[in-house]
Length: 108
Image 1: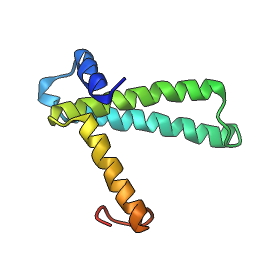
Image 2: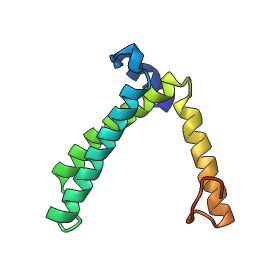
Image 3: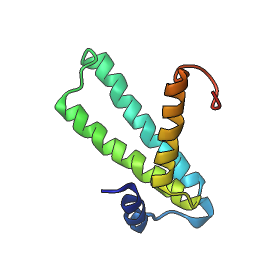
């Protein structure tokens, strides 16, 4: 599935208060990202850093929720997930080529 298809199709399930058009999906994104982090923490604490099949499946579901919220924020801002992904890869490849993947600041 293409990101643009996902973005368009996921919009059909976007039901939240219009007055919270940005806050609702942004807060949802933070919450779901926290759930992914919680699974990672528990894998470290309870599974010696390994990821069981059950945890991997649970993390897959949470990552799907993260993707949904990212898609809604992009749509609300009239941004394309395809373009966001492309620009991000260009930025990272440029940093890699310049040897500045590690470091501080957005404009390195």
